[in-house]
Image 1: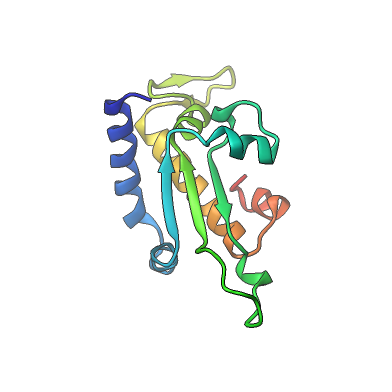
Image 2: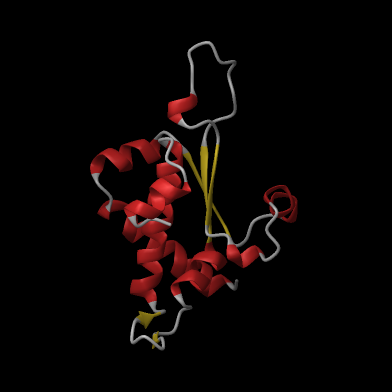
Length: 139
């Protein structure tokens, strides 16, 4: 991703964060939010993903529902957002319409995908699995 597109994405992320409910913004303040263009190859190998642009986000850490006061201290929980995967999932930077007549691409759709990805990864933090997230519309 080039510098202007990276700045464009980061501006959309900055604009999206205040739109989240206050309770979720507070939760995000307690987590590390890491934004990269794509995941590192070692991570792709660990999770068995071939195309780096197929991954929009990742929650790393122990979900709240699985923590215990008896657990040894661990690294802080983090949420990773991957710019290229999110832009690809949104349909790119340019607006267009798919075969079903659905609008795709453009900044508004990219920002929606940023929010969906954030909510998806926060869902994992709260112990939701992929089926739960799909039922909620965040898959």
